[in-house]
Amino acid sequence: MHVVHTLSDLQRALAGASLRAFVPTMGNLHQGHLDLMQTARNEVDARVGLGGKTVASIFVNRLQFGPHEDFDTYPRTLDQDCDALAAHGCDVVFAPSEKELYPEAQVFKVHPPAELADILEGAFRPGFFVGVSTVVHKLFNIVQPNLAVFGKKDYQQLMVIRRMVQQMALPIDILGAETRRAADGLALSSRNGYLSELERAEAVQLSMALKALAVAAREGCVSGRLDVPALEARAMDSLRLRGWQPDYLTLRLQHDLSPVCGPSTQPLVVLGAAKLGKTRLIDNLEV
Ligand code: PAF
Image (tube, rainbow, N blue to C red; front, side, top):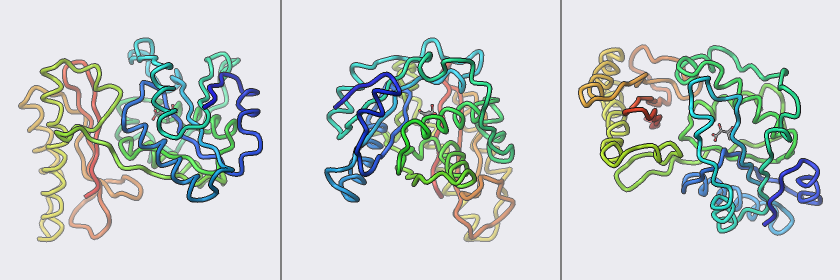
């Protein structure tokens, strides 16, 4: 596996690859990220075999962090990340410095549509999806992948990237990989590392509240009686009572994340974000 830090070294490492499969990350990798790399590897092997290459990027992207968020303290664990990627079929790691990726202030940015990017995560983290879309578009231009793998854990991010690729006519297949969970059901996340032992034991309650919301939504769609605001309020209250500060627990249409008004035959998803102590966790479940 090659570890490269500059655009020119990356081009050399990828020269001649008949297919490029890309996994963008911010590092501090866990098994969920490694699943994305394994998906990329399997796709390359199935589509072209030896001629293709898998690439992971590791770059903590300042543009997607708010002023009071954890950019400075976000764990940088390059050596461990490279060892783990090497064991999961990665051919090339691209780990640029900030100066390499943003040699001057990034004043041209990708602004995703408000109806998709200013709701849910975007409402609580203003500018987040501008930062994500801008760096992902730039990384796509640099890596020139044929396919890229993103986790469903960041459901809204996956939707934003899919829309960007479609609207900009980028010739890249976007694959969504299932969320990897711990044995108790907690979705794996780099930010789980911020939890104390007590908080870690409590953290599974977010996925449990979402599961209860999903079950109630499914029942409501079948019975024809679905009071979405009441179900969402109940889900939020169930976490509040346990000491959480929920931002949202909500039922949405899968295809554009718009609100659900009543019983629906369309594919639905429940999404949630809530703070436990100082740590903000997100999760979702397709209904
Ligand atoms: O999901 C992430 O880790 C980041 O948002 C991404 C896609 C690597 C962009 O910085």
